[in-house]
Length: 406
Image (cartoon, rainbow, N blue to C red):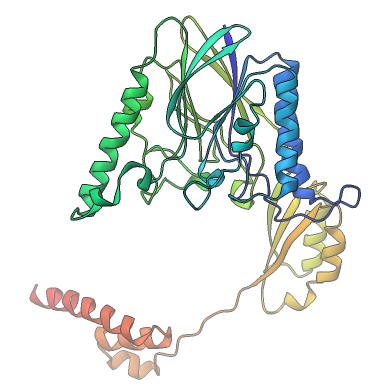
């Protein structure tokens, strides 16, 4: 049985909602991401993991600072010194913006760091672990330009280009899968978008410029496990073989506030693959809404809610729903004092309900007006732009005429 630790989307360099740590001179948010990364490395070493597989996006951007590179390298070195084989897949955030420029993790390949393999292009790898060999088919981030030459684009429609890309990717993956031998277990490591996967905040994946990974290729029974990176939300897309996005190991923003963050440990060998999701320590993100619109003493309610909430070490966004009448009693300075246990206050927003009064005319004018005239007055009162009003009225006239014909 070979135990594989799969993680992805580290994104070192995300420092929003943070401040400088006086002891280290580093962003408190960088320290959050490094704490989660240390947890991953410690777990791998202490639990004698046989293979660590990183599915791409080590840094926030393609030109990481020397500090971010140093901190990433320190932790990869710990795995190397512990003789834990580590497989690093190149993600879209790791790629340079020009051909032949070095990518963000190429240095590990250049220096031939022991026990570290870097996959920067589609390929087949055979990795030796303490429990035996593992085959890995690697599919790093693929751009359209990697699959088609400029000459191939000429004269093709968008639909034809997409079809040509899908055909090229299918051939690449099928060809790599054909190199798998039945003597040892095989994995697929890919960084990309799978149709049907879900982004954070439950947003369905939108078909854009991403090269889509065909789910049928990922479900190939020759793979014991499919390790995916690129989407931050942890999810399993297929049971056997498991096709899994490990998700990111630390929260990026409030859109990921309710998502569990962590990595996957899979046991591969004879029989079905077993796996578990292990959560990493993360910074809490807390968005609170306190509605005081109908409360005679708004600060009483705000104080009660904040004192009853555990704000320790959290990044907090507070929204106060108030009325024009009681907004004056909302004490921002006192609210800031009550929020002092938080690690960072992202915002204190006053959402004041201001009723909108539409002036459509006198009661007599409204009674004498027809539906079209009332709609015209309504759109004007709502300050709808003239071009938009004209379009809406055109559609309205069609509806009115259909009604008149009945």
